[in-house]
Image 1 (tube, chains in turn orange, purple):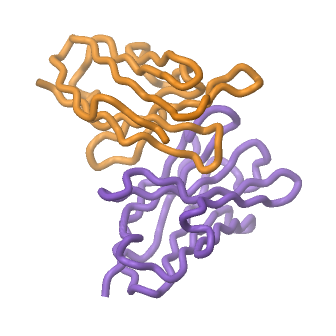
Image 2 (tube, chains in turn orange, purple):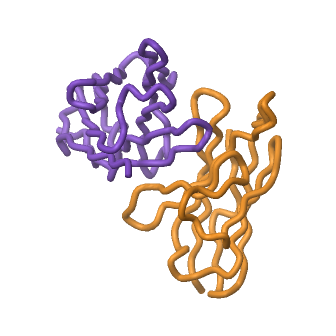
Length: 110
Length: 121
């Protein structure tokens, strides 16, 4: 089970935003990687990959996005939020089958 | 650049079979370093992973328990596409269905545009 908080996050442009994802099982594999990904779903669009293996930015993702954490607790931080960052952020564990998603954190601009 | 183009009927009658196709360009469905996934999204269930298929010298499938008795994911190497079939649908199967590629330890890096399927009489 993946639990995200907060469910809603109002942020002013230029401010930073931080959200949490917690798993009820460790996502650390024996190879040293944490199998936790972050996705952003913009309104009316398919989800897009932001972060994989806990802290690796996907191709083309601005360095304003950073992922951290290990084991069962993970954080996604957005520094200097921009209007285009609006949407719902999901974490997903990719270690255990079935792959499972969190309920999402909806980021909106104040 | 990998692109996934989905197609399928938007309306399915209860008890019938839901079918969605995902045409792959820029990659091969038999690429032995990736997996091809189906995920659906609904207001009541959120994002729900349904299953995947992948090729590692032979084909493997892995399905979510919640749909295991009803789901089938197949690949067509001649057309370079994958397909989802979900039998005996109910209104609870209504949602947006996505195909997505899982890279090798790189997350679900490419997604289809989504197909809205409504199960209703």
